[in-house]
Length: 497
Image (tube, rainbow, N blue to C red; front, side, top):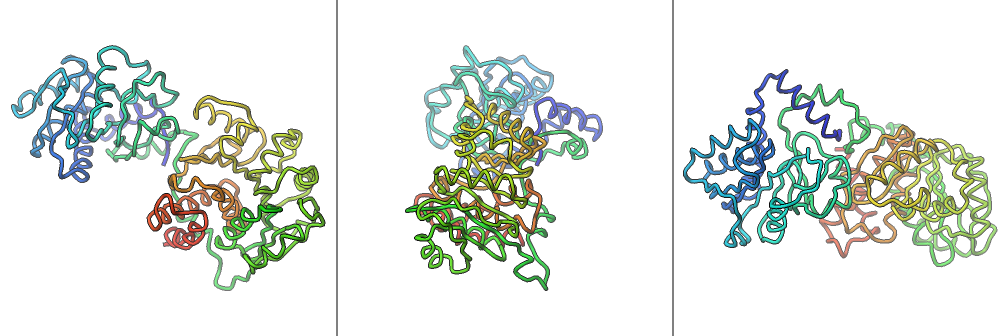
């Protein structure tokens, strides 16, 4: 699903109006009916609605929504936040609304609206907002934020900028955001989540051909039939066809990370798995992962022995590997000589940040999996997620790598600067070991999928899906990366079916 900017969305509107063809007011009516359908499907037991309408087309949407809800026996009040003069479609819908006696049209909120069963609909500003909200409208927004009840934003919460950071904190805090046709980039930003709530994309019939031809660096990932086919092997396949993976990680008192990574690889379909381990850690691997072969490091407590990695299709380096000089030297030797799919996580990223000459040695197509703290060590500080995306693009394009910047909507960026946001996952996954499991999934998929960007997108999706299934089964607090391992089977089944 593409993410378009405000200019492209406006152009899609105009193209659809001219080529469907459909009048602008009728397209507004179609969009408003979609909002009403969503509200009636999800809040059939609540029948009191307060619509806050601006004077532009977002306000026109709000007025049409109010009229349609009133016709379905909702008790509706409309607050004209910016008066009764506005865009042509706003004024047409206001004229239609004023003919309905049952709708209370006002210019003020009252204290008797502070009850839980009221639905507040924010239709003050749409995605075209380009300046901070001040004055009387700011008072409306702060007032609504203080009131109880469900808050639903039409298109985008008032105060949020669609394509750049939003100034100030005068922003309506929506429980739900109902947007049209395509998502906004702002929806993907961590700093906006307390305002966006849960967002839903409503199909209002804008031209699919036009949207398909729009150029955008941003999208939201959904697996395709091609992705699903790529994770299967033929009926005559043997273990070599599934590929060979090696995991270099763990150490004294830190073997849990490598165990989770190994489980992720095994349960993502790898044919042959090898773990490089220090002598005193070998027994732990053999007990926990009997399927794994062992590369015995010559060092007792740190990993540092360079082995022959030529036969491995994928190699994970980093989970709890430590920062010893020998370990950093081992990574440097791997960067020089390894030709398979390299996956760098956790401590490996810190080693790169502290030995910056290694960044220029990264093999093309290497997959890195930093969280924001680790990524800042690589690129420097940034103040918001829009800046983070610019840094992400620049880093990937310069080094010709794929980076998974982990977060609520993990951003996967390729060497062309294309960014795909993940749509699965939940806060219960924010626990130590979750990233180690992701590394293993990457290593398990890599030999069959082969393309780094596609490997990364599908692995992150499956990882989050296993987390979502674990959330349903165990709950946010009880679920762990180990329960996610158990639910990888169900994640794969959902993808394959």
